Length: 326
Image 1: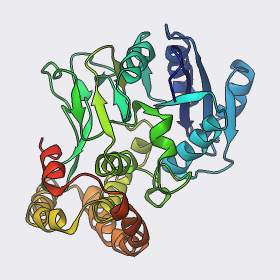
Image 2 (image 1 turned 120 degrees about the vertical axis):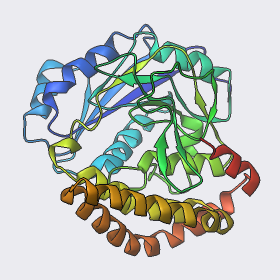
Image 3 (image 1 turned 60 degrees about the horizontal axis):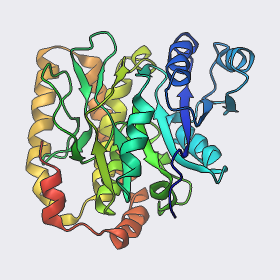
Image 4 (image 1 turned 180 degrees about the vertical axis):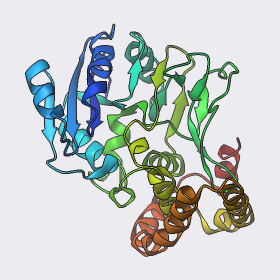
């Protein structure tokens, strides 16, 4: 299908008790120089009047009230499904409540996306919200040790030139409808079993093995605070990162790569555990161990998804290993 010159984009913002951040997030969206967009706010059972605030102060925003906290993955899935109900919607942009975007962010990405068909996702440089000289990410990757990493995280260096990356960071990213429609799990765009954390890495791995390009576009900018919701619960992010890591790897990667990852994965786990013991960070240590143990039952639930994805794989092992370089 030929793309219209100014395709409709729908922004999805998922919130949980972040009413204090919504005005800044929404304001940066509404200030976009590209005007053909709509905005869906998905609320994950907030108790801070976020829903009433959005309905009263922003009546133009579509509100999806989940009624309870279903997690970041399901919240975004509901928002994406709502966006794609409109057949004119050609792109879906995700933006965290603790993130803002430059006024040319959407125009920049749409202009690039229109000239790069068969691409799944796009992101600009994302900088630290409080220090615009520090990178938050220019993409995400699963490295040769099986670790999910934000490319350029906390770097003071300039981001690289525009390039294909392993995946894009869901804090501020743009997905094409063609890619979303091609997902093999119907409307489970992000893996619901993961609930929160690494769900965008899982999506990136899926895009990569299915042969969809993910692009870092070195123009414009987004700004991200980071962990505005999860930081309210010490150990929360550590638990879910380690809980979801092995299931994400098992679901997406061929057995030959999984075997090559094992030594590095074990070594990095041991180093992290030793550092936590030395630092006497018992909260993070317990969260890591619990996460690894509770991730084991998820491996069984990923078997069916792994089988489905294996049939969709178009990238060979050598190409995949090359994309995993950091």
